[in-house]
Image (cartoon, rainbow, N blue to C red; front, side):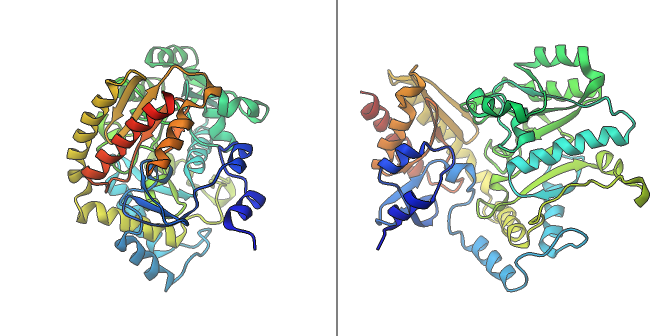
Length: 420
């Protein structure tokens, strides 16, 4: 009988994975998890140092989220959201609006981070059509941006490794490096710009690149000055990752669109939301014959199980005082990153709240430095994933101080062993 490994190699195609390498190695097949720890089919335990690709918030197998999903299963798992509604989707929308920056008042559900961004792009373009300014069709994003893998989100992206191949499919986007570049573009083309997109405070796939303090607020100011809408992609930064519920809070910014996914359901189920304002929503109101409807949707929009999990996750933030308890762990991460800076092979160690990144090098792409470090860390019981030469430290918020110390200690040992 074929083993799970044999079946994986025969039938699966993994994302962002060179499958020739994958099929030559012994894969880790996760079977169970608890808290910040994962267990594989060989009964080996690992610390989850990247929160299962930045999604898990309160830990795996959390009893409150488990119970909420089970309770919803006894009622209905899914029903159409086109012309119908459901209880957890309504209750979640209310909680999200109350938690989000003031002024965001409407919630449009989708499936993942890419689709949350696609919704914002289409709403922004359609908004200006309804407002009688169809010439506003340009979009502006930042260099090295990453907003997802669907075509519109890839158009916003600025990382050639991920995006260059697909240029024949994409629409044109102005990419800027900083506030000065944004100012220049808006001064030239402001009357044609529909929206500006930004990853607030930190760019993820760019290598956890931390923005200068004040860039987000200045982006909001420039958008207001030139009449452009602002899209804040908080797919990664939302739900406590930067130390506050949303990164936008730290510069007192309310975007016109707030894109959420990953941690929205606590890392349990695919669920995304695009929050927007009454100003945008009202532009789509009209008589049926006017065809002002937002003609966009997904089969699993407003999925009841996902919304139930997300409601439970938000309740845990309150019940367990998650953000309050996170602050000492952020301080500990600061101390641990300082130890990385002392290593000869480390060129930088960056932090934004409870997001840490350690960059080694410089090494060429083909040297696989980051991959080798993560492979060694896996052997030592820690799972994370590199971005080129940058090692990400982003465990679930529930990780204990001792577990965080263990993660950082293993990664320091892995750097020394893999690059010696």
